[in-house]
Image 1 (cartoon, rainbow over the protein chains, first blue to last red):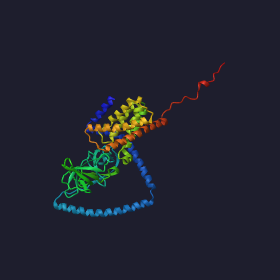
Image 2: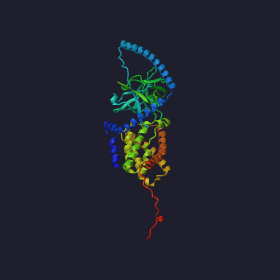
Image 3: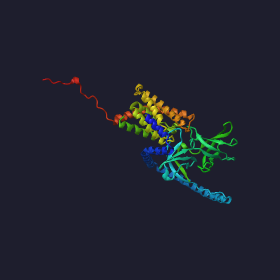
Image 4: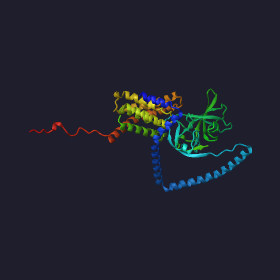
Length: 258
Length: 182
């Protein structure tokens, strides 16, 4: 028993890179199970596709066609606005903004422990993923890459104590604060702290990434203000923010490449 | 401990950890994930002994930490402590009683996460804690109470189905033996 305890203490005190390598090695035990789960979900999807009625598929196809046309019109409009923005930036002499490069990933695992908010995605170092890359969904910010393996990466979600995001409120004052941890049960609400005590916060105001800190680019939607209160003897304001992205039902996410 | 037992315990531990990480049904229903290793430890400690406890604590703990944001190895000591505590007093526990299995499952289901949280706090980690943690522990306790007897049933079924069964006494009765005289 002493030997086991000693071994565990040695493992717990390993340097970061050695522990990460050992974690990766032990985690490879699950590779056959990943393959099996992928194959079985593929079979289930194909089976579901084969029994979907033709009418449903035709209806879905029509809806997607209409949505596609609307999006194309929006894209044309946005392209024109982007050109205008570029011309104005040139006139004022501001730096050009490079468009985002995104890579789609599937969420394959969730953290088995209840006190962390992390997921694993099916992209790794061989796909060009590096630590600290931002991860988004179509609704808003999801988190950042924290550890990268060859074929998978660990993403720490917004609301985890290890994922702090500098954010600004879309109001007159453009008040800035830091998005911190959520509660252990409700992952949809997170705390935004260190807001100025004079901040003019109203429920429903949008919260975006501020671009400070160098990890998340400016302007990614995070959520909306729910309520706010003065804390630490009136030193600063803390607000609760309802996240835009539904982190408990993530299936596919986008990794933002530099 | 026989190698078949070891393989069986380790195999079930791998499947249990994979289930915890990949299936969200309970998490969506109860708002928290249930843990399978503590009730499995109750079975290993009561029926398989010290070797199985060490194997399950090491294999299960390290496998779980490999999929989690826990510091690597943080799950081993709480599982080991719970397993040894049961193993130490297993002669005085009614192992075959479902009630005893359920009570131990509930106790270990709550004790292991509590010990893990304490260990994380001593390592200066900052896990998500709050009033909701009490609900998580309640769910873990209830799941442990249900799953510990379920693991006993599962392993008994596996043994009955796949393991070598010693043959019974047979139909020979010495009192009906025909003794031949001259």
